Length: 304
Image (cartoon, rainbow, N blue to C red; front, side, top):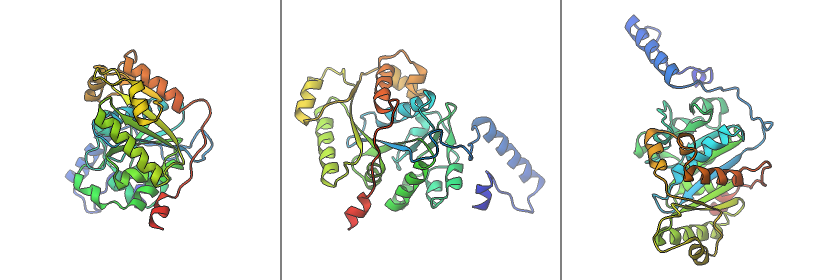
């Protein structure tokens, strides 16, 4: 742990052979060429206060959470909205790393054991060429069951104190890690597509959040692939849910092409309809002034 705090990325025994030393140097050279260094002294341009936590959620899989999370994180960073870290809370099968073209050395599994130590936690982040940082999902899906809610909450709290924006990509459903993310969030973006099952799932998820009093945040409702011709339009969906849709993202071939290549679509094809819609959503979520921030307490309320 002391070595990590000092910035070490590899360890060798004192009696390492020349060959072992040569291999370690090769590993270091490969890392330096493929991963920009993480600046452990980086300070928040807003003065070091508490940042905003944007949780992207959807109870149904395949609605485009990761696309929105990676593109919003990329946009926040490149448009100068402050320092940004994206965290992959799809702890079994998260693909933030592949969507951003990253090859992380460390994951959430490493950061969980930092126990709130800021320097150690930040040393486990992976830098993206845009300037944002990522904390990627574990490489082994079995590790997802080893994390306690308090540990996940502490991780988000630590990052929130160091970054202006913490964007959290979640898994499908209403799992305990997802509830931790929503509880910590200042902003929650609920995503659905234009099929009836996804709309019903969105309504149920919102009901659950309200029932357990997870309401102290800004809430955004996004309809992805909104131009799909499936017999439902935005008016029908809003009436059935009793909720107003904040943004619609049209279907676009540019989205899977960019994600398969490891790029954000707003970077890869800024002229596509999907990119323009994401930019408009970004302007709503991150205007020139910050909305009010939420408090904490879900874990304590549920356990009380």
